[in-house]
Length: 383
Ligand code: PLP
Image 1 (cartoon, protein in one colour):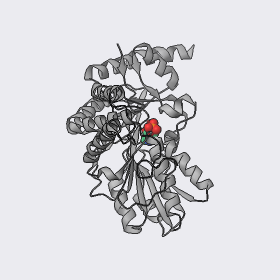
Image 2 (tube, rainbow, N blue to C red):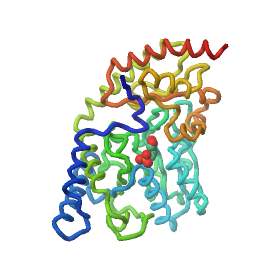
Image 3 (tube, rainbow, N blue to C red):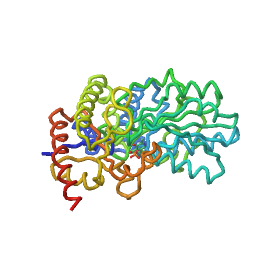
Image 4 (cartoon, rainbow, N blue to C red):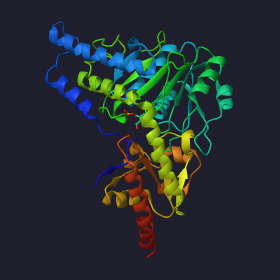
């Protein structure tokens, strides 16, 4: 048996995505910049992907730049917007629980002379919009905020935030890291004040190493890669055509039945949380229910280190993560869990994250395993 509950780290590729990429690699392998038919065929795949993706966000294909994934999209958004707008001011704002792709890019920009304000979070990962409003000045050129936190599934108020930002300083750009929320939430970029939005393919059953950055028309941004001038000079380099075609397919599929998929995820999560709450040794961090993301649950288990539980569940065929994937391998303590005020529990926290391929049977099997395994592990620990 294989039960994959690590969908915030990455997801399984859809068969339709694999078929599309297979076709592009085998048949339509031309360079999209070439002037002959092979080039045109490749270019058409990029065009189709752009059209399919832009429909999911009510954006225009011209507003999309394909990248190598969430990290590159975020780097382009933050560094590109900061350098292009620095004459207006050198102040940036973000939250304390962002993904390292944002936090480390902000740290780089701070080294380049930008001032960065970090918004505090409460026990549930929520922010105070009043603190955001007070932080924005005439010098603030960019606010970057994640939509869904990858470790505890907190949902940040991006709709309210964009209203606060544009009211206080209409020139301040707003970047949203939607890597964990795209495909789970309807985001209408046509009517919102979001100027930049980052998405990654491998979190939505698409390929790894490909994603896109949405850049609202007329937003001033500078490239961070230089070369042949592809993608309106914003992202040089021959496009990853199979990846982009696969991404287009994955995005289309993610929104085709978004309502049903999200409802199914909430049902799974609710049942999982109900079962977890029956276990006296387990504690859920952050909000649950519709106030939280449909696919992520952060749980600490008294007295059992996260990596011990991870491997004990692995032996039962269940794959989860200790904290977040990127922090886990480096043996670093999770930043989000620290920022929401956890101390010793951080080392005992694991993350379960679901996808539309998971079933109620898998949920019940997992919670049953936990109820049997944990008392045993704790017994051994005491000897
Ligand atoms: N932002 C968030 C919230 C994420 O969860 C991740 C990946 O885990 C990223 C950004 C980085 O995306 P990628 O792995 O495509 O570089």
